[in-house]
Image (cartoon, rainbow, N blue to C red):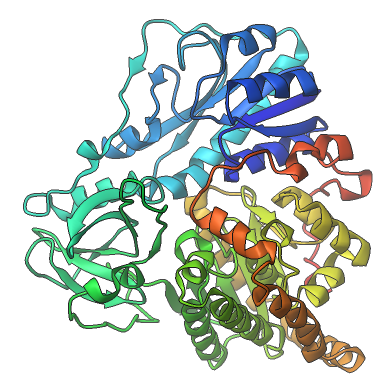
Length: 585
């Protein structure tokens, strides 16, 4: 079918639905919901057989849904209604939830049901759930609903009763009472708003939105007091413990410029009281409850270097700390080293927010990309063990290239890759001109860069971007990766593979040194960073300040016309088999 996606933002779910529907054989275009007239015009131009709205914060006009069937994704079970479904579920401590695809009607969330898929709600942040369990259920529900619609025989189920209509979850419900709320309550409030909108709070002489939260099991103090810092996060006391808050956003003043999230200590700046900086422990006992963004553990011949940065953003500091941890991991007597393994983002490359906040964004851009290159180079030149990149969540730009530097890339079935830089006006670095063509070939590498479209795990497997799909729930990914890594580390071919890897690296270095790739890429990047008129600077500002776009990104709007919504026969995903992954090619 010809399908039009309409969305309020090209977020992870919109991208994933776009890509998954394309792999089902449909032609798919995307239009942003930038107003009622814009939507009417989009439907007229595309003349779709059906409209799908994976993420919509405004109502579809009556004349649109009356003229063309519109299927809306609601992040709640049948009968749940309202604009803050997932917020309420986390607030009330729900363990089970669901996603419903319903037909747009006069009453919001009250239309006929085309599909409904249940899912678990583990105790993690809202945005993590949205990209994980909710995202998995949403894609499953959309694909089922579209198949049913395409059949022409399925009749959607009417909703019985009035449903459970809940109001918008405003800041009055989110506000933390530091003098009364125990740690569990504080964490639950933070989890309902970890990415957007944040929890509004007043301290350190200003109003801030708090983003993210993790329990601390040893530090104590006066409720609300800042007790310590660690790797950019602040620790604040509760009535019965403490919590770590990784990011803050200053409240925007009326008529003032848009503000954006930053590491908490950077956001506070001079407002930060004199508190101790507690070093981030690299190795922690299993029973510790504290926050750290980089952690290392060993299980026999396998080392696990796990990192989890808010938003997947890797600042200069984060790259340098991760490189130091990587070097430590490489000093250990292991055969296999696993990078990542967490349930959310793997990496999205350089930290655009920190760059935007810098006194000299060009200089910080250069420092950040240099630090990313140093990290990727360390992975590429590791020849005494196998390195596995384990992507439990999405990876983009330099973060995708960090994964490709490993010998094998394992990807959870629900993860999405964006192996390109063009949408930020960048040529790209992180040795992509070496790693991407060696995996997918020069022609396919050029197409991925030029088209700048999201790639599902299944399609990435078929292209050769990844070597193994791990089909499991987000909560199960770490355990499954641990099991698979142990099996490889104890297999008889592992030493031969390590020796072969070393020989390939020496051969490639003789043909063209890594330093040559780095110099060529960074020459392009430096030219962009230090050119005030380069589009990168305006695109970066729009991105971090979440400025509303004036039109739909052309690579998505025109994808159906260019065949971007569906792969060619050679690009279609291949079946998973027990054959050994093709790492290092």
